[in-house]
Image (cartoon, rainbow, N blue to C red; front, side, top):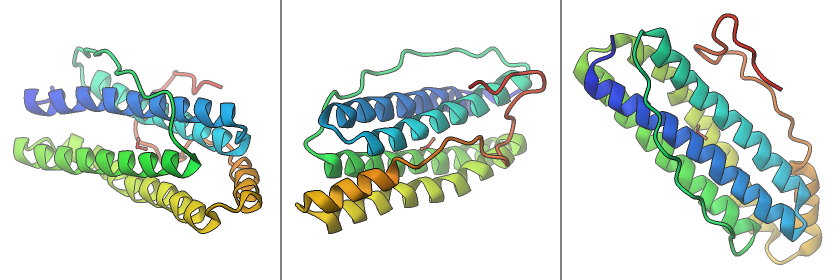
Length: 181
Ligand code: FEO
């Protein structure tokens, strides 16, 4: 069984990861509407990764014979001022998620829950990449500035991102569980 305090945090993290998926879908929809199809593709790939993050917590909790309780997902914003503002918001969101992961590592230590601590180490590394990816997009959009041609080149480049299941993801998939499309 998972200690109650730890379980509360893990449950909340499913919600945080599903909200991450949802806000990146919202950002993609906004950029798609504005004509930035490449960046929209990049964000939709990111949204699919967030679903995998949620699935890892889901699988981990159910694997430990614990009754999972799902909460409502908050409504994300509909629009942002510019592609730069989208990626600034994405970077800030990833920093928030890093804070959540660090907090959970602390709770795992305090409750002596070694299994949670070990599983969370994958997310500690993953967050380094998540922050790097979004801050790089911010940096490149800042460099491009008002030059439409540079922004469109970046849009094309970001549109080449393809989805792949992270090969090292813990508790994913569960044995016998499909990985989905
Ligand atoms: Fe699941 Fe982007 O953190």
